[in-house]
Length: 275
Image (cartoon, rainbow, N blue to C red; front, top):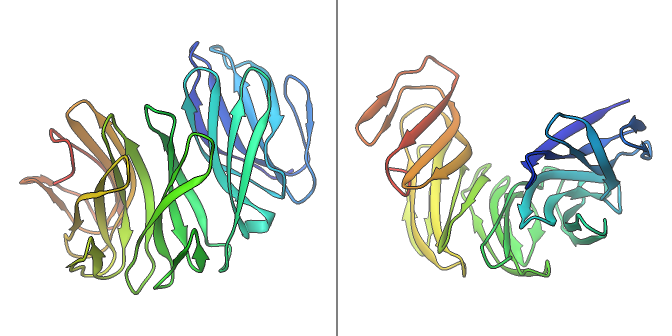
């Protein structure tokens, strides 16, 4: 049986919810069966790691790839469905077990996918990923473009932004704060942010800041020479942490991070946005 766990989020009582995809039968608190094409699931584990609840969440073959908690009683999921041809969002009611799902058909190849999701204080949520065709009224420019989409609290798309160079790009991580949001990812060439072209040497990390209404605030391409890929971002109070891959030592605000060729890194700075 092929199965994958793709995302995890803590529950209000110290347990966790795990989301992913499986092909076959997984025995949890109940016997959960999926088709051979693979369907998505949510599993709840208590604080001791004991499964207590599970449900199927994808109406077509596919599965969730990221999860965020909205309050104590809801989960927001994003992923792919229908063999990767549709982008999938869903809100799971943890009290009733109801799943409100939405599919966004797109043209392109199955490299189109969601990579992260975050929830705003007012219930809106934001998903990031990559796409290589047409989705949410946007047309990809290069091999694939980074994607940021805002959804209303009811799960309807309400604005989208592409992060586009002539090569392969991806918006891989998002942090939503009280009044703004930050996204982090990678680009393969020059990118235009709010009408201003920013140069890239190719395979560079980037970050961008927006208001919660998707108005552009600031952005920068982090050029360090060689290849760098941005994969994860977190914010803790006034600090911002980044994680990814680099082929060269990194200079973050005058602080050098010494790495060998082709190593992962985590860097935290005392600033509300990356340098």
